[in-house]
Length: 484
Ligand code: NAD
View 1 (cartoon, rainbow, N blue to C red):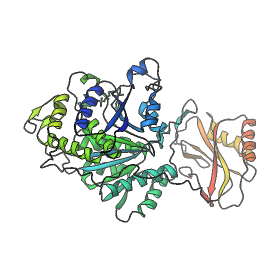
View 2: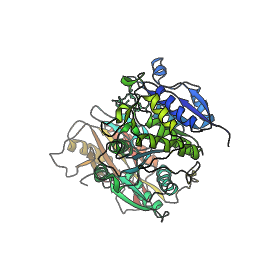
View 3: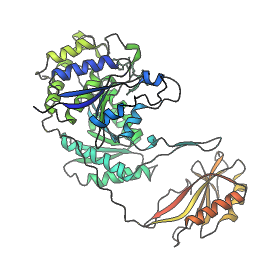
View 4: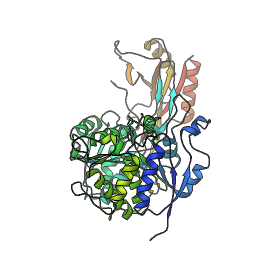
C-alpha cells in the first residue's frame, strides 16, 4: 500500500462542515490514504475584513499538497468580497472544470433516465477574465478573451478524458456564427484537435440550439466541451435535469494543482440540522481519489454509494414516497454507505476505475510562437460623443493620414457612418475606424497611431480607448462593423 497523500481540506460554511465530515467518514472507511491539512475559508474570514475569504497561510498549504477538497462557503451579501473559487482557479491555473451529470433512474426522479453527460468547461478565460470598464456615462464593457493555448489545453483535456474513461463522443458548443474571432477560434481548435483523436466521434453545435437539445435529449450527448460562460450555465442545467444539483460533484484541474467540491452552495437554512445530502461533495471527493491515484478506494466508495441510493436510503432532498425506503440524516446516510462498502449496485451501473489515469491527464504543451506575419494596419478609436454622427464624421474626416483612410463609425457594433440608418439607436461612445484600405500594401507604425490619437485630441475629441488593427498573413484580425 502506498503512503498517505497530503491534501488540503476546508470545511466551509452552512452545511459545509456536516457534509465534509460525512464525506471524510465514508472515504476514510473505504481505505483512503490521506494526510489532511485543514485550512480556514469563507464567511468568518470575509467578515473579519479578509476580502479574499481565505487565510494567508492557506495558499502555502495548497502549494504543498496541490490537492484541495473544499466544502461550500457562504459569500456575505454586499460588495467588495472576491469570489474564493475564482481566486483559487486563477491563482493555481485550474483550467478545466469537470462535471459529470448522470441520472440514477428509477431511484431518483428525472425526466431523462438515460442521461450520462460530462461537461468539460474552460475555467480561466472568456468573459470571466474579469476585465470590465465603465467607458462612458452610457456604456459598460466586459472583454471576452479566448486564447489559442487556453483553448488547446481544454479541448485536448476533453479528448484525453473521453479516451481515458471509454467515452465515445466529444461535442463542442460555441456561438461562432456571431463571435467569429473568439468562439471561431475555439471551434477551429476543436476541429484541429478532434482530427488527432480518430477513435472518438466529434461534433459541433451552435450553443443555443445545442443547449435546447441538451435540455430535451441529453442522452444524445457524451462529453461536451465549452468556453467558460456557456459551461457555467449549462453544467447547472445538466446537473439539475439529471436529478438534482445537490448530487453533482465537480473537479477543477490544473497542470499542477486541483480542487474538488460539490456544485451546490452552503444552504445556510439547512445548516446544523443533520439534514443535508453529502452526495455532491462525496462525488467531488471520488474524482479527487481517482486524481491522486487511489482509484481502488474511489471505486469501492462509489459503488457503496450507488448501492445506498439503489436501496432507497435517501436524504430529504431526494426522498420520494413509493421509491425511497428510508429517510435519513447526513450522518445516517454516511453510515449507510459505509455499511455497504464492498457491495456493488444491482440495477444501477457500477463504476470501474481500473483504467482511470493518474494525473496529469495532459501535459502543458511547449509554447510555439506562431510564424504568421503580423502587421498593424490601423486603429479603432473609441470616442466619447453625444452629438450627431454626421458632425462627428465631419470632425474625423480631416484626421486620416499615414496611409489610413477614415473608414467607418459604428455604435454598439452597428455601422452608423457612412450610410447609417436613422432608426439605429446610438449611445455616447462611437467606434471610429482608421485603416489602410483592404488589399492595399503597407503597414502603420505605432508612431503613426500615436500621431492619429494626437490629431483626435487636438480636434477637441475625447478618446476613451483605442484598439490596434492587425493583419495576420494578410488576413484581417478584426471584425467588420455590422452592416458594413
Ligand atoms: P444553495 O446551493 O446553497 O441552495 C439552494 C437550494 O438547494 C436550497 O434550497 C438548499 O436547501 C438546497 N440544497 C443545496 N445543497 C443541498 C444539500 N447538499 N442537501 C440538501 N439540500 C441542499 O444555493 P444558495 O441558497 O443560492 O446559496 C447559499 C450560499 O452558498 C450563498 O452564500 C452562495 O454565495 C453560496 N454558494 C457557494 C458556492 C461554493 O462555495 N462553491 C456555490 C454556490 C453558492
